[in-house]
Amino acid sequence: MEKLLTQLVEKLKDAFRDNLVSVVLYGSTATCDRQEKFSDYNVLCVLNQIARRDLSAGEPIFRWWREQGSPAPLLLTEHEVRTCTDCFAIEFHDICASHQLLHGKDVVTGLAIDNSFYRSQVEHELRAKLLRLRQKTAGMLADPNLLRRLLLDSISTFCVLFRHALLLHGHDVPPRKREVIHAARQHFNLDAAPFEKLLDIREERIKPRDVDPIDLVDPYLQGIGIVIDAVDRLEK
Image: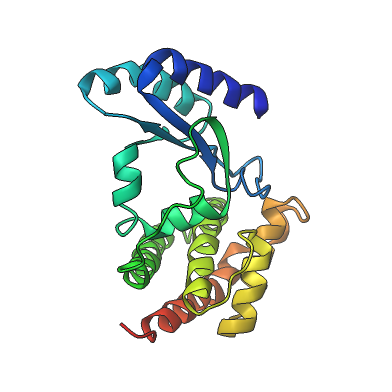
């Protein structure tokens, strides 16, 4: 990991030079909750300004980074970091909670996050991800392997959103997936079993073939629905 991130930082420094303000690692790798077969390297790249020439300079680097199996770095100006936290409260809460400064100025520590639309964003993301999951599940019920992979990929996103639902209810828990599911079971009274089985597979505690994904669908979707209702009931 360290070698790969060092390569990325050197490429960004060569491409953007004095325009590069900061490079920040965030997400599961920064929280030491990375699962090799499922987790990406999430990187925020902050520039003084972003014009066409900067996008052009970054194109080969972002293509190379995607080939390593991770999404292209997020590109923001330093001004945007300060002014867009109301639109991206979920993302900035996560970045502020767990990040590693890889290069340059620390633009994250002490950042003031505007929570004006936080509850709405959490509910919107939960509902949108649930709708998408239902659509995909409907096309995979006849293929257990595809269905299992879908559920395994989706749980990371729902753990993130469950943590924000807990934060909205006044419960601050570490961003580690198992701790989030344990807290969600306690505070929202959901059935944790389907979530824990998927985490067991991701962490290679059990073999994928030992779990029938069909049996997980109903309690998994119901658990997500319980959290959505809990967020919906909060004062608007």
